[in-house]
Length: 498
Image (tube, rainbow, N blue to C red; front, side, top):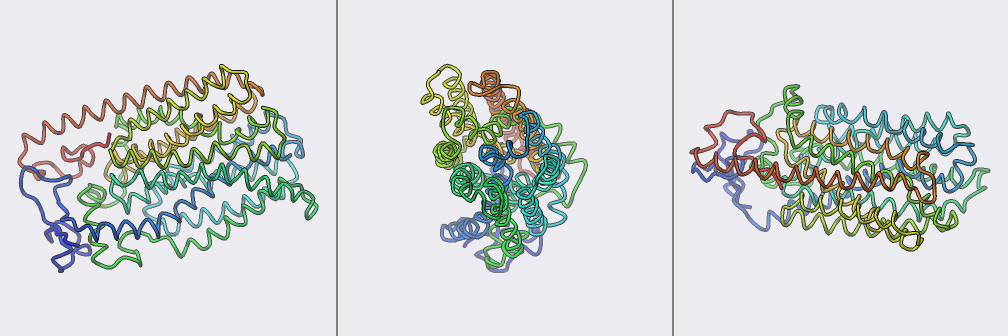
């Protein structure tokens, strides 16, 4: 691969004497993003991303698949008899879900800030292994208090997973390649919704095996698999590009050069509280956070209550598990297609806006019709929209902050807001709005869809205006060397993703 950089521009470990793997420093006023240009070689380009997509991305996708599966399989267990056997009221069920989210939210920011120091290759597998144990223990609880304890520790251990995985991928992929990858692993969440229904349908027929109810086997079997996969991931997750065993040195240099030219790994030596505060000053953080709260309420409302909603339409418990599969399967396919479009045309804002419009259409259909067929059909719109806006918005949020500590803070706060919406969802559909119409909840979710659309639009307009100002500023500058170091996304050469 032909790529070059002057040796004074990269750390020594990223420089290779081979002329085909160097970066050339550009001195003209038309410098590329970050002030460096990577000389392209299509063969190298295809090879390095294919290796990452085959070696890293599947492991990351499985992490999130298991995270979502183990957190939301309580919805399937509820339909299978958990609530009845533990003698829970609807209010107590909502409390059990809320107990998950409190430590989940508290853990997100410190977990993301610790990830770089501890190493994702150690921290992420440890979290996965431990929450696999907790998931398994949910299958042996016999009291409501036991379930509460398990849900608390499950939330604590899972809290840093999604923001941590987004941050982890940013160590390997430049910004313009992030959304497809984030969606690829987030698509596993919608896949888990489909797969969970199929699994639950089969597992509940184990009712009585080992003198345990069918719902307990949902937790036991899924938790054991998580535990075993967690142990194996200690050997499959690389810490960084430089620590990958499947790259040659030339390939490592090329990927590092790509990240540097994209501003992904520049202008920061270590953790800085100043960068945390800088992140909180970003208008795009707050535009996205409000949208994330709204979309998070929608996402977790549907994740936790779709089986119950479908059962309220007149299906048996077993059939409700199966009927929950098609909407999530469609959401998985659409979210991947949408991510390809947003990466190909770099239009994350438009895709986010269209996604929440889909949510609004779905809730309007459910609210306006008394036909069970129309109400079931509405889930294809609302679930698809919710599971598309989540990864697209996450990638959009992560793409527009730099350097790494600032980006880590932005990502973590985004997920704090998303999961705060999850707390509202547990009460909105759990006890405040009764089945089968869920009228108050549906109206609220419809309004939140509209609010999310407004703030996604506001963020898009703001970033567009900032890019316009940066373009005007670049015209007046000879090169990036005129700027002070450490500006990150405030640099005139840092182009915001729209």
